Image 1 (cartoon, rainbow, N blue to C red):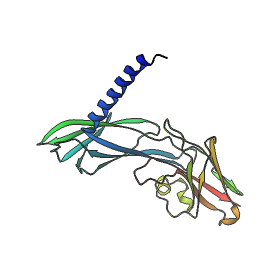
Image 2 (cartoon, helix red, strand yellow):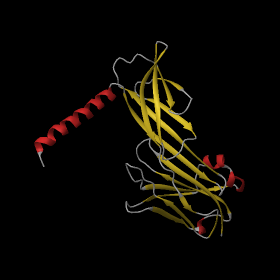
Image 3 (cartoon, helix red, strand yellow):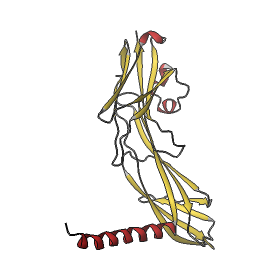
Length: 239
């Protein structure tokens, strides 16, 4: 290997990376996350949507604008926020898709003039595929799901929550999304070699028969602005 030939190429690459970093710091730094929710009520009643959060810290010098406009590429909607120098938080709530990259354009409003400022790319997490329980369960309840992965990491920690629900809520998407206060919950950590997770609830511990829902979510210990994927699945449980 010819070190004399490689070193100039390495220095050029580092210089270009440094220029890009300096240019970005003259604008700002973005922290971004997606929250994916998938709800399965029956084989024909389901819903899937994503929420994107962007926290943008303006680090550029001489920023005199007091408002910023966010717009997702491909959408005609424009959202205007007051600039908070310590961190402007924008939340896009829409029927976004999982495992998809979205580009957000930013403009600042300065002296009533709208000026293009920056853009932020956000890739939403995949949804969690819950293969069991079925729509009707008897005996012990085994929850099985596929591990989700991205280009950056495998998600190994999951929270499994069990909810008791009214029979009418078995097909009520909004009621299932709003569920709180589980009757039981457990955290499961997978090994890197695992492709799926599994946890079993004993039927002897619950009031059967009745309507139930299980929620499987990724977990994290790092604040509120983090990637999260959750799947809620409703079912009828009998002895």
